[in-house]
Length: 413
Image (cartoon, rainbow, N blue to C red):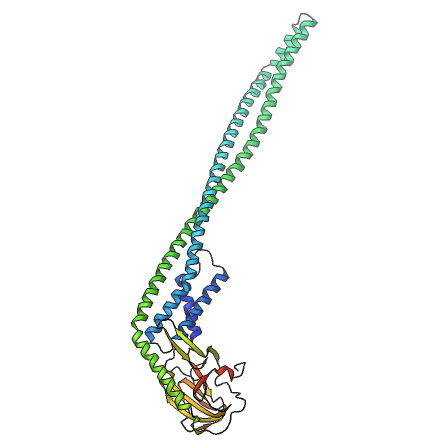
């Protein structure tokens, strides 16, 4: 007897888990991680819904909290591992980036020193060329001419001419040294600029890596705190569920008693004549399947319970129609089933066959009334042990429930 609004509660549960930190903290989580967390939350909610039909409201709350916390634990543990790995990786990257920044800064300092030395050589060469230019301006060339004129002979003139050449060559050498020094200083200046930019880039990268490491560490701390919080939620939920043990088990015993009475009441078929042909039933309500037929084990209270029908979610007040022609043999309140109607349809394969409809908000037929296939017999509700609008639909043979999906249209339409 599941719930019409189960999908809403599941969505809300997924949202709660997400807010609580099930998704990875820091950078946006991968889509696959989000889907895994959503699936885990959905399965947890469905488990809680499936086994708690006859539990108290307090027990339901405890079970849902327990399931939600339990489902969130693997994702949280994974998040902690990922966050810790991110911390280690970020720290390693930050340390590596800092070492590179330090080396780049040292290289920049060395290049800057070479630039300063080259600049000094330019200054020295400039001073030397200045002296030569000054000497030329002050008449040094005339002095050289006077030296040649004062020569005593050809041999002396050649010697004096060679001396003058040496003096001029030294002047040219000074100009060459200044040009070379200027080229060197331009190259050094370019290298200084590159080294400075590289150093600044390396230092920015190191700062970014350090910030990443701090963020990763904060994420790891938050993940660990979430794990602690989930552990507290589980302890609290378990304690709350345990406090409801007596009340819940009493409801289970009552539900089993109701089931036995229903079987006994429908075992003989109530004298309805006729044979159901083909057992091709009409869908009793326009909705969608939310819970299957079958035995279920309640892990909280360690008992087995038969879910005797199939649940179809539908809006409150939606019409419920007879699945086949027959006679109303039950119509009224029936414990956890709430407003409950059963219709006998005669025999099928030698057994009395009936359909039953639970949790109705309104019953529109009475015991002994004959109904036609498709006739409105009631309205969808949430009475009895129900947590939302839906129809609990049963097919019974001599009172014993069987899976309704074997007799309904395969399309459930």
